[in-house]
Length: 156
Image 1 (cartoon, helix red, strand yellow):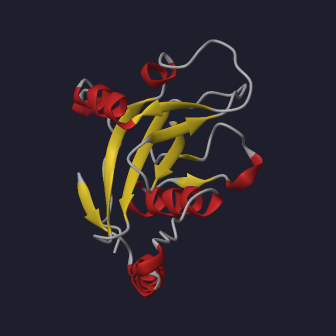
Image 2 (cartoon, rainbow, N blue to C red):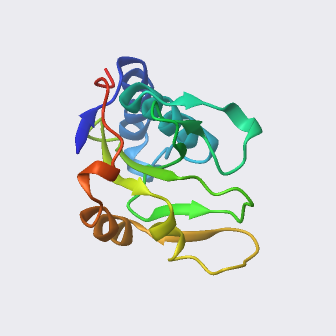
């Protein structure tokens, strides 16, 4: 499912795109990643799906859906997938967004239970491990409609 990014995010992306165009001769990309992309993902998840965000205090759970499910949100501006860190608390549900900065839109790549995604990760590890975008897309096709979070409003 694709969606337009909210107007405030579109302004940020437009500024990024202007920088990218200005410095195109030296091939600078001005990628938005790290904490900023994660924060954008959580903010958009709150708008689209009505999540009540927890803030930075709850590792492994970014918010709660209107039906009470705990939710982790992952977001990326690349096509590589999402990184996970080992955490003690696992969420009931996972949302994974891809942001297309050039097109100024977002896409929900995965909207389903977190458990099947965690099966792509080792039982224990140190640092970060990633789950690829194609793996998320395959898993998303297997999610029953009743197991998805429902959109409560458009992001913009």
